[in-house]
Length: 433
Ligand code: F0G
Image (tube, protein in one colour):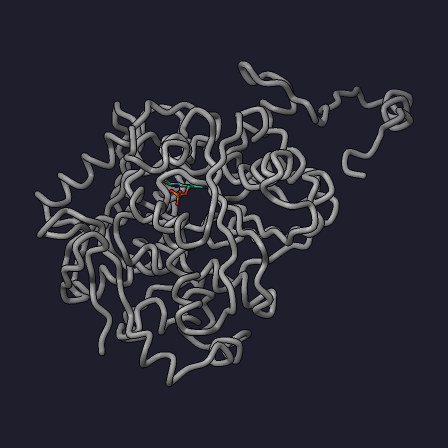
């Protein structure tokens, strides 16, 4: 049986190659559903292990290595791939100790071609745009989706169109979108309003929407989880911890884990913890109310990537929390920036939103929810160079309402050996023991 689109709310099914994002019958979100019963008989997880290190298109991609679980029927010559994925999983005992947990790995999605996990979704989405014969693709974005869309559109000869909120898009992301030749429009509205606008304009003008409401994006993002498990030799961790904004990753992770479990390729499902910024935490608030319903917020946080008050994937993310016995937590901007300073000082580095993962682990250990002997994998969603202004502001201690707790002072000196010696002979404690 071929893969299909299926409404998660009412179960209505549609052909896989329909241009649609929500159910025509009830407005519910759509899933791409694959024929797992056949896959269970024809493939094992070794099939995917054997493709590791492949030099061939499309299996050299960390997304398309798992093609049978992403978009099985797409012709290989339509796949748009840089390639992406194959990101490192760092073992970080010193950061684990700082967070109070026995074992921690960090999966660095900032190592993707445009510096964020979005590339995994975008290869899925832009490929599907080509299958559908679309010539223009668009998104609203806090910055990373747009950088990724711009690159993948340019790489495959499509027109990329990106809608930015007027303020607070990090400089690296803005620069990428312009450099990759997207039609880039700053709009005097926040992300949530821009997402409404892009959906409306795209419907009117026949443009393909590549926000994470597009289910083919999420199929690509599932491979973060597949790769983590492969890199751990399928030895399932206790927790996977991920930042939550529009909740695309949160949704994709639950689907990935449920599929692996149904296939019998993992013997148990790790718990998923979704971490939001305090000023943009509608999912956390709904979690506290037993997921009665989502109450949109006006979002505000230094982690501009996740400055989102009305996450479009809310129902799918609820499904993840329920399917994985997961939790939702929130952290302050100060906690985010301090955790980021730790990750950066480790030589790994990430953008502010990504540091929710480490800040969230520390908080959940403190609250006794993550046990100190449990095995944790945190996901770093974006590269340190995405938001240079946040880095410099923290270390110069000039960010409004925030303290550069672990600031690494930038020294100034004249061209004098004495002055340099004075600086280099100071006593400095190592930041990470
Ligand atoms: N981390 C980073 C670096 C992001 O760019 C985003 C989302 C998230 C986390 C949140 O992921 O939406 O799957 O919960 N950025 C989007 C964008 C919204 O437009 O670039 P999510």
